[in-house]
Image 1 (cartoon, rainbow, N blue to C red):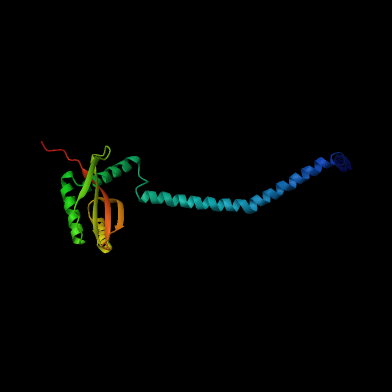
Image 2 (image 1 turned 60 degrees about the vertical axis):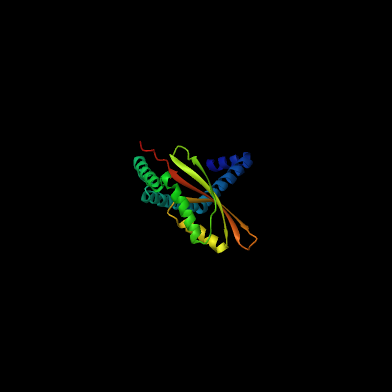
Length: 189
């Protein structure tokens, strides 16, 4: 009976504090149940999905060579750069580019009368960047064929700007800006 009397006296003396502790205890129990029943399953699902995607990305990188060591990546990058440099023609091919542009325009039924070009060194790459600009006029279908033919060229041609303007004869005038690259070759001694 002493325990019962002790609890009764404790309740009478500290009723507000004990009620507050009971409310806190119930709140903890409710939060625990909410966490267990609602939030933890969502977190576990998200975590497993993240791990699965992370594994997929690692596998993809490995298949693309991204999983190789830095030394292997360097060797592959050096090989890619070497292949790119071989695809870029030497400066002696500049006249071949002009001839090809003239031929492609002729095949499309167009005529280029003048080509302006500006060479500049492309950083420390050892390449010359040529910016070419010219105008050509004709029917829209001819211009479309000409641009398509340039896109199919094996040369590295970058169309950097296109301007269309209707002409008085019902045709279209095309102002085209191109960029291309050439290797700087040392002059033989």
